Image 1 (cartoon, rainbow, N blue to C red):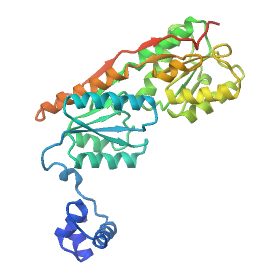
Image 2 (image 1 turned 60 degrees about the vertical axis):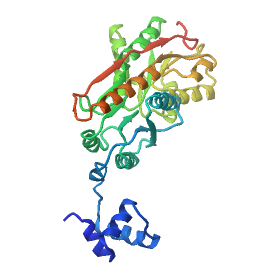
Image 3 (image 1 turned 90 degrees about the horizontal axis):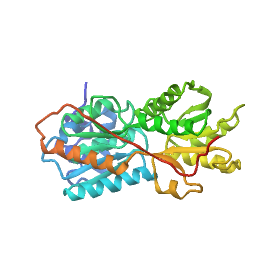
Image 4 (image 1 turned 90 degrees about the vertical axis):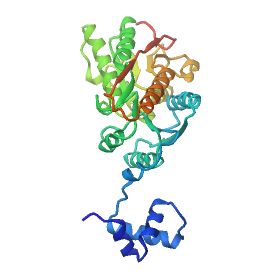
Amino acid sequence: MVATIKDVAKRAGLSQATVSRALNKSGYVSQETLARVEQAAAELGYQPNWMARGLHGKSSNLIGLLVPEVMSLYDNSVIQYMTEKLHAHNYGLMLCIHNERADLDLKYLQLLHEKRVAGIIYTHPLNGDNSELVHQLAEHLPIIELNRRREAGLLDAVLADNIQGARQITRYLLGLGHRRIALIMGEDELTTGQNRLHGYQLALTEAGLPADRRLIRIGSFSRQHGEAAMHDLLDEDVAPTAILAGSNRILMGVLKTLTARNIHIPVDLSVAAFNDTEWLQIWNPPITTVDIAVEEMAHWAVDLLLKRISVPDVKPTPREYLLGTSLIIRESCRAV
C-alpha cells in the first residue's frame, strides 16, 4: 500500500498540517520536527506527489536549462546565448547542472516542476534515464532537446546536422590523401555519437574504403577518453595519419597525449575536431574543425520554446529542426 501524508503524520505523532508544511517546505517547522517527519517518511517509503504539487498555480517567467557541466566552452556558450535571448523576452534562466548523473537529473526535473518553470531546455538529455518522467512533464509544459535527443518524435528538438558535418570533415581529410583516419567518439547510443559515426562511415564508403574498426574508439565525451584512446591508437601496428576528435573535451585528451609523446601537428599527425571554440583558433597550430553554430541553435531553441509557451492549450506534434554545419580549415591538417 502506498503511504500517505496521513500515515506519515500518524507515525511521527504530528498533525497532517504540520507534516505537510515540513514536506513542502511551505511554513515554519523546527529542525526537531522536520527530522521526525523525514524519519517517518523514510520508514514508510513515502513519496510526495510532486507532479500534482507543481500543477497548482500560475507558471513563472523562468526557463529551466539542464546541462551536464559548465566547464566546457560549448555549454558556457549555450548558457550565454540563451540568457541574452530570454532576457530580451523578459524571461529568466534557472540553471541546473546534472553532471551526467540520473539521480541529479531526476531531482532537478522535480525542482523545475515545483518551481513552475514555463518550459525546459535540455542541452544533453540523458539516454534512457528518467525518460518516462520527462514525457509526463511534457504533457504539462514544453520541453526542447538541444543537439542530442533521447528518441525521435517524442519531444521538440533543435539539432546540428552531425551526419553531414562528420561526412564533410572526413571527406576533407580523404581529399588530403589520408586513408587511415581514426575517429575518437563519445557514446554511440546517443544521437550525437551515432550521427557523427555514421557521417564518418558514409564518407569512407563513398570513397570506396572500408571502415576499419581498429581505427574507431567509442567511449565517453571526455578528456580522459580522448587521452587513453589516443595512446591506444598510437600503439597500433599501423598508426593513423589523421585523427578526428568527436568533441572539444575528447580533443583536449588527444592533444595532451600527443604533447606527452612529442608528436607534432600536422607534421607527424593531422588533427581535426568538432565544435569550434576560441581555444581551437589560438592553439598552435590552430585546429581544423566543424562548426555546429551554437548561437544559432540556442536562439532557435529559445524561439521554439517561447512559441510553445504562447499557446499552452495546444499540444502540437513534436518538431525536429536540423541546422547546417560548416567546415573551418586551419593549419592542423596536411596532405600526405
